[in-house]
Length: 131
Image 1 (cartoon, one colour):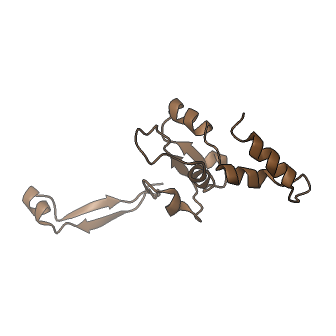
Image 2 (cartoon, rainbow, N blue to C red):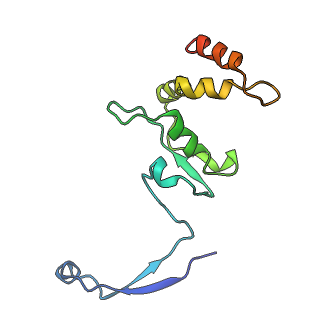
Image 3 (spheres, rainbow, N blue to C red):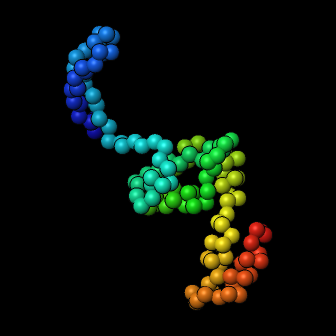
């Protein structure tokens, strides 16, 4: 299905200087593109598709586990998530990301029945950082 074409008038000095036609046809596509959205900008939104760039950065800001979670949770299905470019080094760094120690102990501080357990939290605290 072809997108409809609309006429747009060019009224700039540059268009006149370059000798461009006064009216040009513009074809709209069914895609809505957005680039360089941060995890803060995406919070609370649901996207139909997301292309994620995980390229290895030489300078900050580096991706955090929280930011990564926000990115991957913006789509409803894993099939809607893509990588812009496969970067094995960046993926290795991503695999090493961990939650903050206190958050990790908080999450591990509940027993199988969902009740808080000081023992579970203490065990998580003592075992943090070990793989």
